[in-house]
Image (cartoon, rainbow, N blue to C red; front, side):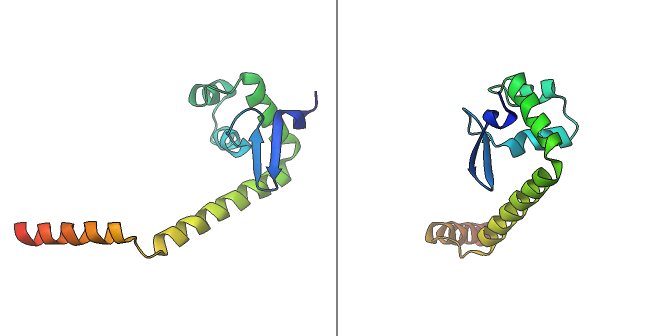
Length: 108
């Protein structure tokens, strides 16, 4: 079995552990934060130690590419967050804010 057989390469920015919706970035983050494979399994119990070790090994064998992958994902998440934070609130959110402001004015 090849290391790549443990993963599903859905797109250049979406690599998942085969049979799971968990991305390899989730395991790599834990690893980079100093978690042992056993500790990672405690937080991600649906993964076998074999798959966790395979992910770490893949990361170590492809470190420059994986670091670039992780950076792209981080930037993409930040862009999505910024777009969300700057978006016009929905009518429901506007109405809730209006009601909340009225309630504060009634109390205060």
